[in-house]
Length: 80
Image (cartoon, rainbow, N blue to C red; front, top):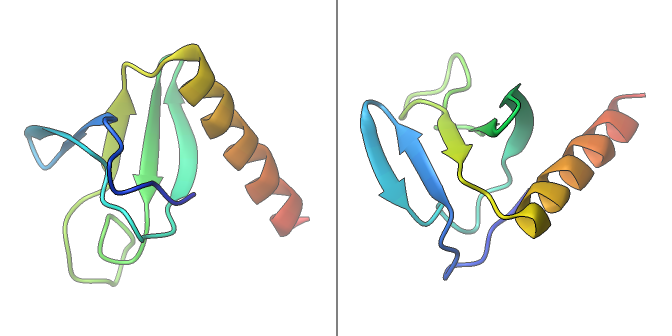
């Protein structure tokens, strides 16, 4: 899942909070809890790659949540 440069999505990473998920990176989306998701990519929490930790996203609008759920479904289709 890729994000626009002007996104206002809140996320936590390495004990800090930010607004605006990095753009131009294809993240793998996973549900973390009922209202939170994790994002991983090379350099963002994948083992064996140097970089920062995964991103924890929360506080999504219902439209954003639907987009995340759609990304999860598409990822599952790619695996099977």
